[in-house]
Image 1 (cartoon, one colour):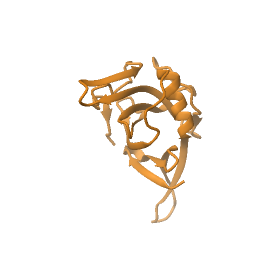
Image 2: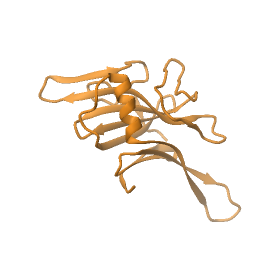
Image 3: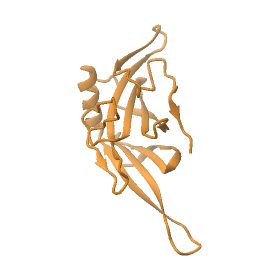
Image 4: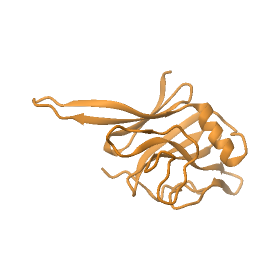
Length: 170
């Protein structure tokens, strides 16, 4: 499909959303060469179809999403060095996705990942995928926001819509 959204983060990570709402995580790797020119390689680390994403939401919240259109993506690295994505739908539903983890199931010390097809990047020692951590719904005009999901130490986007633990340092 055609790319609708493109979001870049530090350390060469970037994410796309296409016209079928498929999420893709990429990384740019600099290749050492013995000349004055530099060579960079783009590698797809993980992808997640809209159907699989909305299935994760249904498994976590037991409710269908109000919108199946992804309108915004915010990508960055947490203080622990792991990649996270904040995704917003047309109905202002907010999804927090863990995109890199220490285990194939999306585990980070105390966080258990949801079902996703994670792939280990060759030689990186890190696993990549899309593991839904939490879902919150913006209820502007209704007295705030509601949140569903684990409010654990890695859920950096609570119902208030802040990015308190989100760092994009290089």
